[in-house]
Length: 245
Image 1: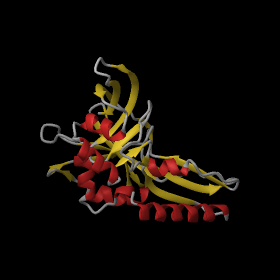
Image 2: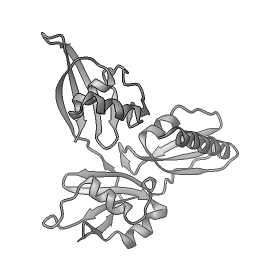
Image 3: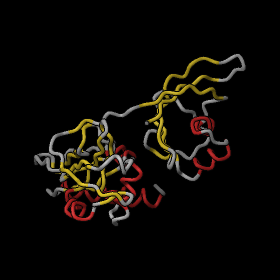
Image 4: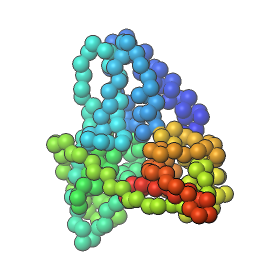
């Protein structure tokens, strides 16, 4: 997020906290992991903040602000399976999200889009679900059908491990190696605010990465820093990276 977007988001959260402390209930749209990480730093003796994304282990979640002594658990989320003929359509995350956006739906109304086995599912806010059921009929020109899923699904995230040999643990060096970019390109992506470490934007190209860091690069994906091993004969570092498939 840009600084003005961050400032606006923080003001929204402050307003939500105030409303909940005065007895109100506030339910947000789906939030990404950087926003969720910020909310998890907040504490109040009067307000409880809870999260749900429609799936177990969801990345995008709605946040519910409520008075500490009021039990509320309706996050108003619906989950659908996309039923389609695989002979005519090969699905992926980008095609599904693009088709939904083409309907004029805002990204924050859609939660995770996941593949479990051979089936694709997505979560959405209950408020937009009637429109989605009525209008979401095709992907890439191929007819689809939606089936609402009532049971709770567990997301299984597949990781691909790679060994990288790098000159240092600087963020620009690691990103350049991870995505086969030039150092200049990696540095530009960092200074443009396209890179997050542990769900927070990092603008420092010389930031040192450590084991268990989660690094997200917009338009590229996300990877986890695994074991940092010893050095090669040429004094370079051996680094294990784990990429979300």
